[in-house]
Image (cartoon, rainbow, N blue to C red; front, side, top):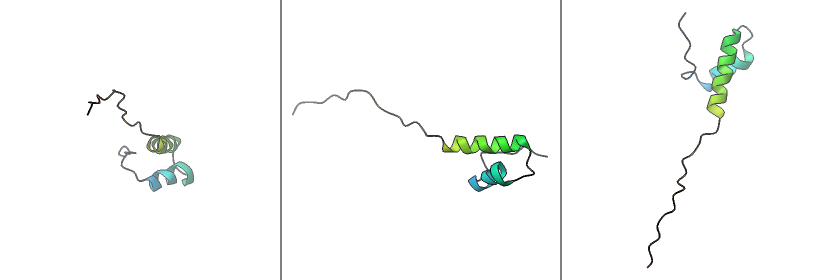
Length: 57
């Protein structure tokens, strides 16, 4: 059996494995939940804290 690639799975597939599939192995359930949490976490945006030079008119 080939190793599952959780990043290629759709959200619906992950949801089905994590919450609805009663026959799924515990390691697959945990991996699907981890991937759903990874996708849902807030991304950090870049912030430029440098003070921009303002030239007088």
